[in-house]
Amino acid sequence: MSAQRQCLWHPRGVLCAVCRRPSRGFGWFDPVHSKRPRPSVWFCSMSCQGFWSRLAKERLGMVDLSEQEYAAIRSSMKLVAEIMEEIGWESRLIDLTEPQVLTLIEVAVGGFQDAMLATAKADDTEIPF
Image (cartoon, rainbow, N blue to C red; front, side):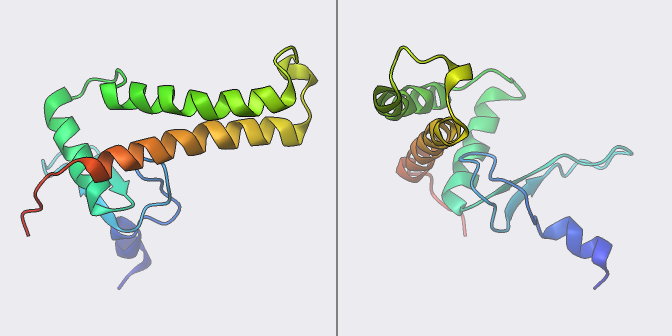
């Protein structure tokens, strides 16, 4: 198998379109033939893939955050608040050390990912195969 063909089906280094974890081979691409490259997205699990396809049908190309994404942001705020309590609420962002900023970002992104993954797993879409 040629290297170019392998790159088309294996998503090395691509993040899940739902929870932003590393993808694991579940994917979607636009089946409509065109001269431009076909858009594609990859997923870490079938639950994220099913969740994304249901949302894609509902949104039809809108770029605004969904209700589930807003809920995931709200749930990650609690984790960020705990870290800010440890750092100190009076601290300016520019005064934080690199490890503090990295911890803050890691907690915010991790909380969002966990909430989106939990939403996708809780979604009871029936798998057709």
